[in-house]
Picture (cartoon, one colour):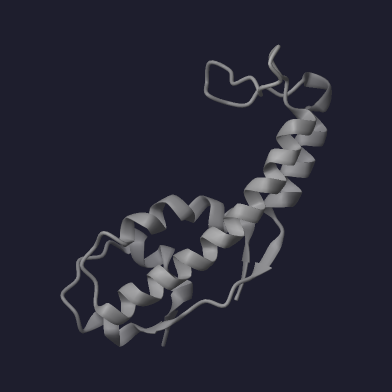
Length: 128
């Protein structure tokens, strides 16, 4: 399945919360397997993101990236456009992940309590 780095970055924290829910075993297994695959992709993304941080971020005397009062990386004004272009290009890269799917009936025939937001988050893992 083709996903973007943006999707896996945005969804990664929330996907982890699903591992704490009581789900049918087939559903739980599929989600855990998919999280493992997504985490491998995130490692690659984070390495490439760090390269961009090293390239564009303002650094302190020790060479560490400066974080501003809003907990945001401080990017030099002359590099803002380049940073934005490069980070968005990285986020928009499409990656092919072999998603382990489960049948919607495995979920519907259980008494698990999932919110609509949680279902939307994993919709690409559910097969009809």
